[in-house]
Image 1 (cartoon, rainbow, N blue to C red):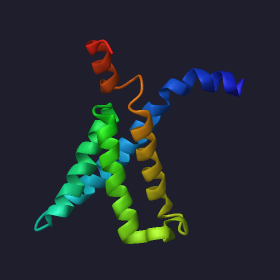
Image 2: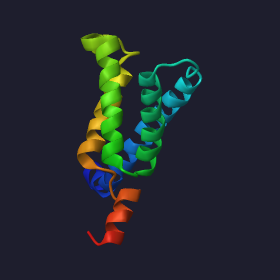
Image 3: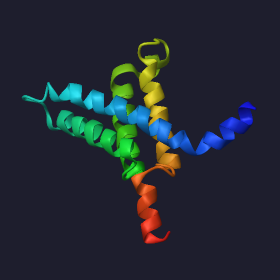
Length: 125
């Protein structure tokens, strides 16, 4: 029973990942906007990737590119802040999960319920 229900819902998996990752990144980027005064170009770029990447992932537009940008930003954050200690503290483990969500979307794409998929259908691919 669990398998039959789950198999019917597997098309929604990319959507669920997109919603989670998109909301996390939009909120993270929105929090960073408060600190943009006098910020470095790198911080502004990180904030832009978080906000725009979060919105793009959420709606499934240029999903693989947005997921790649998010994955790079999160990987840099993990490396510069936590390194391997990311797995030692439950408060930090969310960033490892976010990294894996970004990688999953880069590999899988936006899924059936995405702007990307609608564009493919319009183009006849």
